Image 1 (tube, rainbow, N blue to C red):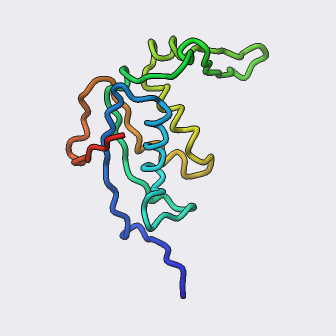
Image 2 (spheres, rainbow, N blue to C red):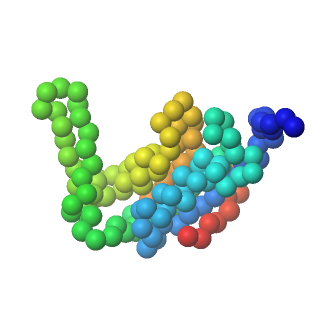
Length: 142
């Protein structure tokens, strides 16, 4: 028996909408990562990109448990000595509310050549409106 490998013609990409209002970042990120990667599909293959697209709305109303708004730090480095910068989750949410979820999902996607293509199918919007109605996205309840 031969192993089935899906071709580009076999893929049926769908789009899903997740409403983040009142949900925790971790729950939204795990659901989005599964859908983006295609882990729930029967044709899932680790070395191929078979996932779907995900639209996340109302990201400004997301929650973090415990004291993570103050304690959680996001780090970046300029590449120069002493160039380490830290930002709390509260400050990140005030300046770039979409980055909290984008970084959470990116951490759940494997670090390989497919990551860029997979992350391009993640769209995060502030507010309840999005501009992807032409893809006819289905609503997912978490």
